[in-house]
Image (cartoon, rainbow, N blue to C red; front, side, top):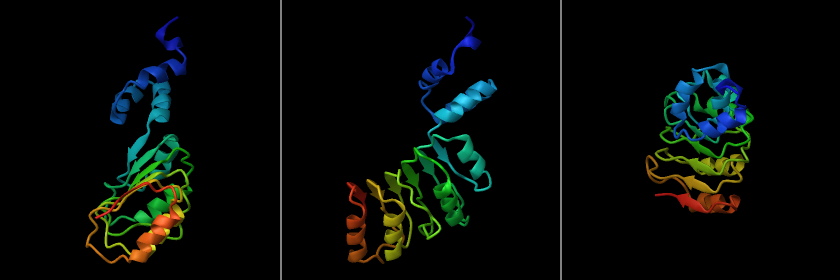
Length: 176
């Protein structure tokens, strides 16, 4: 038996020892087979540009974490998040929206019921409606990071209370 005859399950077991997703890049250049295997193993992605998003989401079906912090501040984050919510990402559990000028949630964003952790650090100013959208879009949220709002204030106590009541699984909230 040659190394080419090893089943994909064996290669998956070997590739799982690779620590960083970026280390999959050289492996994916070896062959189409390795490319296919590493595509299914990649669990996180940093999104810098919206134009390639549909292809990236189709290429990496097992993503559990998306990071939008490098997406341009003046870019259309609303459309980006709407596209993500309409994509089939059954393992998506963490979303990082930090550093935006405002929270890019609106009525066009569908529920993402698998999301457990939402990071919204350094966003602002927050409005009461932002928390309504968080409750509507991410009903199974367990962790919410709303630290370092820019500027501080602008959210009522009622909005915080409705956030806590609307997210029954929320057990870790980081706020200023």
